[in-house]
Amino acid sequence: MCPPFRCHFCGRLITDAQKTFIAWNDSYKSKLLDPVIVCGADRCDRLADCYPLTMQLDTAFVYLLNNSGMTPAKLNQAAEHAALLDSILT
Ligand SMILES: [Zn+2]
Image 1 (cartoon, rainbow, N blue to C red):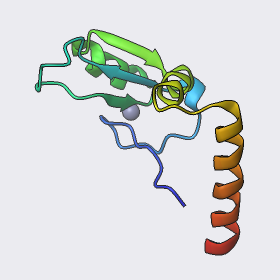
Image 2: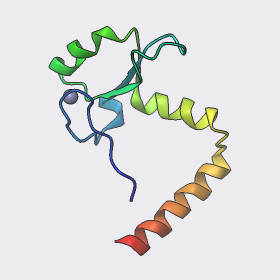
Image 3: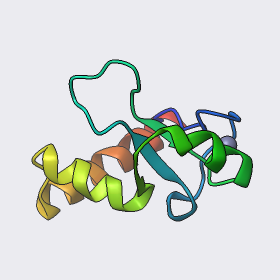
């Protein structure tokens, strides 16, 4: 099983990608701010204000999958592989 995401600020386990967002710096050359996962709680949202760019996590997954060459067919294969791993490891 893959480790779950946790909020960068409060440590809460992320269980709903539609209520969560990813935040990052707009400069790929900057090493000051790496992408972080933010749970969406008001306190954490305010702490993430230092990141100029944000995106809802479920939408970011689509971009990340596309960026990594995943097609719908490859995604189905990966889902089958994950289900197989779950059946073996649980
Ligand atoms: Zn949080």
